[in-house]
Image 1 (cartoon, one colour):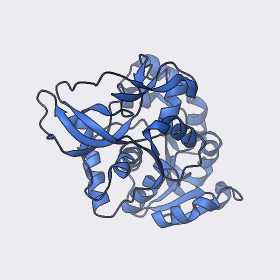
Image 2 (tube, helix red, strand yellow; image 1 turned 90 degrees about the horizontal axis):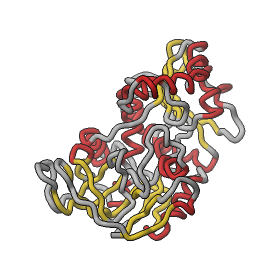
Image 3 (cartoon, helix red, strand yellow; image 1 turned 90 degrees about the vertical axis):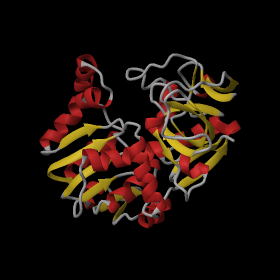
Image 4 (cartoon, one colour; image 1 turned 180 degrees about the vertical axis):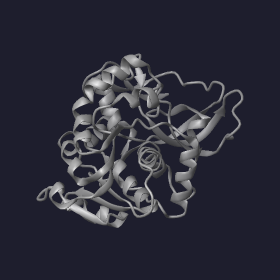
Length: 334
């Protein structure tokens, strides 16, 4: 089968479309004929080797973290799906494999596709929407009447986070360029800060929590936006000890390393009477089924920026890496 393979860590030259053996499903797994695959920043970060301390893959390896497709064959003991079922999934983090004509998925990581979506739109959902849902519902415990700040709301995770926060009853503020303003307002943002001419910390205050999607200077500046006791969940800052123990199921060594790496951020949070948490989302078929129900009920819109053909995977990753995509970038596999 054809697959997009990472041969060594580095730049785009370290990846290529290649012929590789078709995988076989093991107990609790099934084989998917992949129809589309979503792209995410974790893809180019993995290629560059930026995440080796967390997950150092044996190379070569097929890349890709989320997909949609049709069940082709079942592994031993797999009961939740049948051959021919249309599914979408966030694949196992330790295996990847979504950028290929066929992929193996554990049945606990998948759900039936929303009936209202085509394959490219369904492939855009799993990683970004699961991240938004788990950050807002499970970590921040957002509820009706709260005020949530989501900088960078026009990106892949941001477009889902705005809508999920609004569905949970929160008032939402975000940042966007003039090109993204109409989009984030359509998705439900109550307050939009034009980051090209305004500083959000001059406009916002008293927010209950924030979902940091950008890291860097944005994370360093957002503490003053929060009220005392405010909470931040980040997917772009520095991991902290809870990340190692809860998300990665690792021991004290990695937790200690993350303690040092996140010290500056945690001290800033403490000075503002706030708390800080870095989140690595986890695959969940149950959560995907919930998201599918929201999509089919028209409570959650999937925003696609561009769909690239499989042959242009390198170009698709390069486009995503520019940071200009509004919504998700997707590969049409077959």
